Image (tube, rainbow, N blue to C red; front, side, top):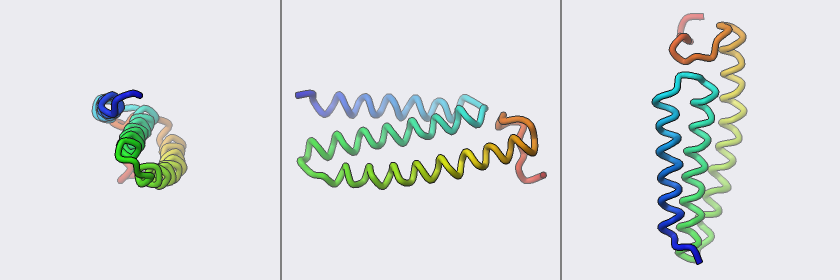
Length: 100
């Protein structure tokens, strides 16, 4: 059986990659994908800890996180599409959504 610490280290690495993608990149699609990577890192951690503790609470929490992630994907992609249609760019530095 694989130790839980391996899963926790993998989850931390995925979360760090996601944070780096949000901070460093300026493309809205890449930022959006980085947020999804961070959500998946949290899901991996919740499932690993739930299994280690012998509880299904982690899997239930993952179900809710995935539901929020699906809603976030729909709303986020709609906002990115609206921004692209109005400004013809998806670079975060060039968008100022307060002025249409």
